Length: 122
Image (tube, rainbow, N blue to C red; front, side):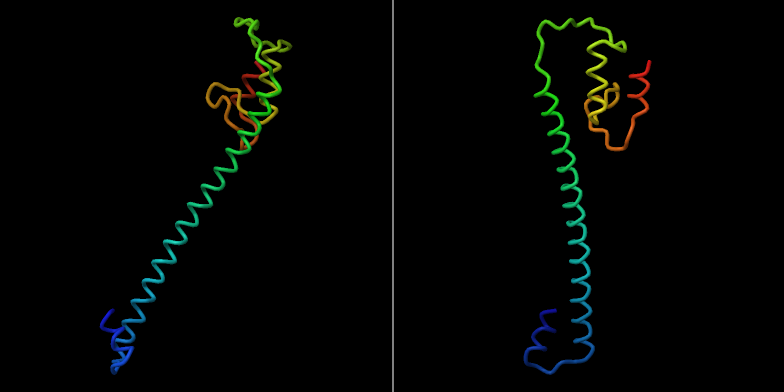
C-alpha cells in the first residue's frame, strides 16, 4: 500500500494499482467497522449489567435499611404462613427478589419464579 500511496502523491498511477489500493482501504474500513460494532455491543452489555446491578443494589439497601437486625430473634422459627419469617420472605419476594434456594437474593427480572411461588405456598 505504501507503493500505491507514493504513486498517488506524485507519480503516474496505474488504474489497477489505484483500484487495488482503494479495495485494500475499503477492506480495512470494513474490518474497523466490524470491530467497532463488536466493541459497541460489549459496551451496551456492560451498561445493561451495570443498570441491573444498580437497581438490585438500591433495592437491597432499601430492604437492609428498613429492617433493623434483631439479635434476640429465635433461629428455630418455622416459615409457616403468619409467622414473621414467612412474612419477611413474602415481602422480599414481592419487592422483586428470589426467596427460593436456587436464586435466593437475586433480582427477579423475568416475572414470577415457580420455585419461589411453590416455596411460599407450601
